[in-house]
Image 1: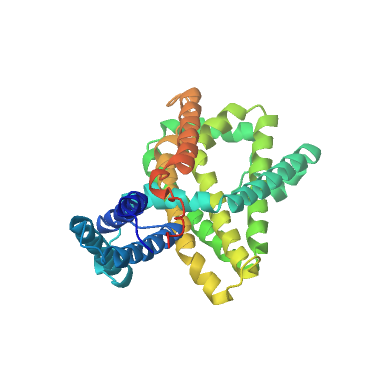
Image 2 (image 1 turned 30 degrees about the horizontal axis):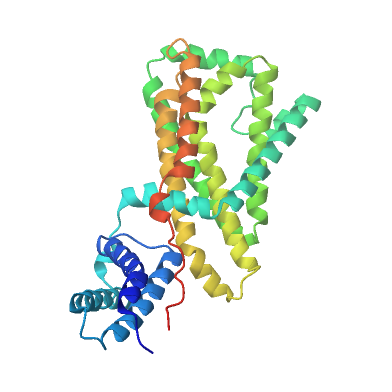
Length: 340
């Protein structure tokens, strides 16, 4: 078959350029998603076939040399394991890999959020119907005082000499506790997700009961100013931990997959590590805000300012999780079959 060289070059050159772009990303230390890696391999095979066809012609030596170099680079990238690839880049991981992983398992996050909201509704309903249920549904000693009594005590303590040390110590305890809860929420995914769902529902019950108790006692503004600055980050972090637990549970069930259990677990292990480590980073930030903003009430810091700050944080977190890393996660279109 006679090859139309000009048409062949015009048809194949875009695929060579696509391969070169992926190789440039790899050589710059970037990582590829699974579909991108498959696309790279397909482009490599296509370029190898093109090189074999082009080698039979004396014409276009420049194109042949370019293609030889491209195929050699692709071969090296596919078959060579380099230690530099294991270099960890925190900013790239947090700003790109973490939100990409979150979006990849968004349905699990939606279930985690839904179960938590269901628990919140239950806790709120129980408090409205039976106020005495607060002794069962509330944690951290919130049932020992009425909301008004607690607000009066908190606002009176703003002038205490030991406030800074107390709040910083309390923040450290919260960081440790919330991280332990998050890891536990993930680990309970090994119970086929049942433990994860129960823990998410229970946390929602506590939140709904406490929130409703404060609102019914006329302390809704205090509660919003108290919870939003750190809670706008802390609560989504707990939901993401639940997301990780449900991803683990889904891998255990193996629905829609022909892989063995061990292979399914190995496949989702990097995503689980990414999610729970991202949760830890968010919780550290929330703990810092807890110490230096959330625990300070009027007259030290106006409630309106704290509420505005918390809402801005929530909007920023939503934007980060939904938009960050999108450019580097773009997957090229699948190549067409090469011309025979």
